[in-house]
Image (cartoon, rainbow, N blue to C red; front, side, top):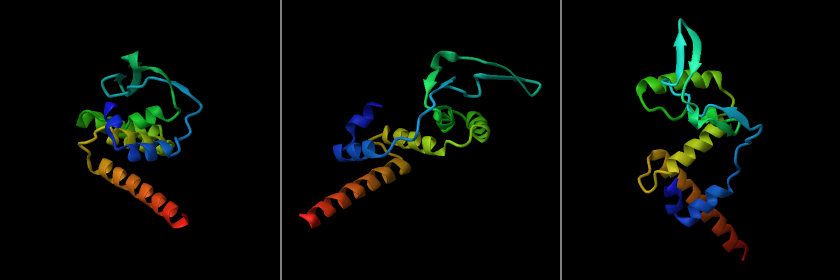
Length: 133
């Protein structure tokens, strides 16, 4: 996330000022449930591999991680997984925003829209201060 340090300071400050989604209860979770780490035989779960990313994370982390698909097959798997892990859309959107900003200065559409909205918030706040002064 080195690129977050490269963001304009006003954007980074406004992003940090946004409320963090509720993270509790912290939950022990795998942390990397991609399709290669989940073993299924005869439609039954038989194992989960690759536990080095496991730990206690915010209750929404595993759901948020379903936004990260590396292949078409993995993206399809994670879409199915999201159905089972639903209820944490706020956390997922927060993570998607962090990921979008982490690509700075090569922002995608989501990242650019977020930067623009954060700059608008700053300009609006600056305008309010100027009009009250």
